[in-house]
Amino acid sequence: MDNFDYDLQSVQETRNLARQAKLAQTQLGKFNCEQIDKIIRSMVKAAEENAVSLASLAVEETGFGKIEDKTFKNRFASTELYEFIKPMQTIGVIKEDKVNKVMEIAEPVGVLMGIIPSTNPTSTAIYNAIIAIKSRNGIVFSPHPSALKCTLQAARLMNDAAVAAGAPANIIGCISKPSMNATNELMKCDEVAMIIATGGSAMVKAAYSAGKPALGVGPGNVPAYIERTANISQAVKNIITSKTFDNGTICASEQSVIVEECIRDQVVEEFKRLGGYFMTPAETSQVAQKLFVRGHAMNAKMVGRSAKFIADNAGITIPAGTKVLLGEQQGVGEGYPLSYEKLTTVLAFYTVKDWEEACDLCIKLLHNGGVGHSLSIHTETPAMAMKFSEKPVFRILVNTPSTHGGVGLSTGLAPAFTLGCGTWGGSATSDNVTPLHLINIKRVAYGIKDCTENTTPSHSACEAQSSSSSSISEDQIMNVVNEVISLLKKRGDK
Image (cartoon, rainbow, N blue to C red; front, side, top):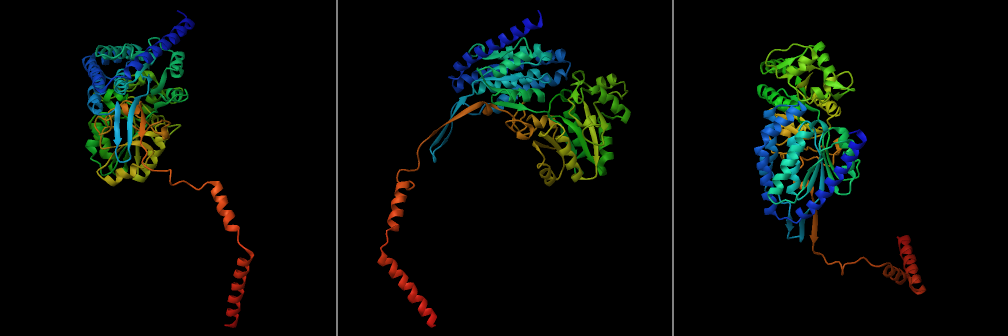
């Protein structure tokens, strides 16, 4: 099959999927809470039962990450997510203000388009499908070509489980012949009401330019600041736990470690003790050359890889058991390659004099590809955490692994794999996306103030008043003048 025929079939498939999802969603929009909950429980069960096989398929197809961690993500995107969203009111009357007599009623958005990244291809599909159904929406996925099989399998499992529990057929669809033309077609087709874009910045920008409401996620370039009062052993343990989780494929993972001079030696020793390898400048350069292509774009072959895999490919020798590679950097931007996002087991390492220098450095790093996303700080001084809450991000994660904290695993944030970056990061939301972002709210509002007796005087009434006030007789005018003259004479006598 030539490219022309493939593109035609790809676009036609996309149109069919959108139409089918729209028909299904029209029916799903009439379902009640009990029906929706039954469907979601069936989807969660299917995700749990297939968590390992989906994870294995994802690692086999993409080469990214670890089977055990992808298994955990699949369960987190289903079971943990369900416990969080179960009490959410997304159907019918969701709020009633009896004092002001306003009633809020939830309505579905319609058909969603879900753009799925290759780094989290099955967990993101599971998560998007469940939050879509919770809010009575249909969804059609556009998978990354390098993760087609596993995303398609996750989507089919979710759809089959939903239909088995009573959902209309084709409520969850997935493009099986991915292409840029198909993705663009799905973005712009009339049936799609909203886009959820989880992926690279180029794809997110494309989603926002499609002329539809969109929830996009920009890149993360998370700085991790270890402040002088931090519990150093716990801070380093948290960072390594986070950065090695699925080999750093989650955008909330740490990208740079920032330490103060007074604790530098302790931090370095703790990293070495727990499996960190500090590269020489030459080794750092060799690794950086392997990590990036076309400037600062991540080399797909290095995404989500172990420290050993990266070291072997870069031609450097590291100790057995090394978990993360660290390279010292003296600046941010051009000439300092590790200052950019690295979705793998490599960290930049910076030394600063004090918290104020750390503050400036964090801002530079965030503006180097992660503004709006997340920042990690390790400190035993609450006031210091509040100082860093002023930084241009919407998740300030304190004393926790950044990966786990950002997605709501180790924090009280909403469990999510779509992490909004707010207007600073070009996103329509700064939240962890939940079903509440996927509903419309209509309001029934009763009159509580009588406006019929308290109206502004009309133009004609004002004119009448003006006319009346100007009709003063000559005698009245002369009397006023004589009174003024008499008053002035009396003052003169005095």
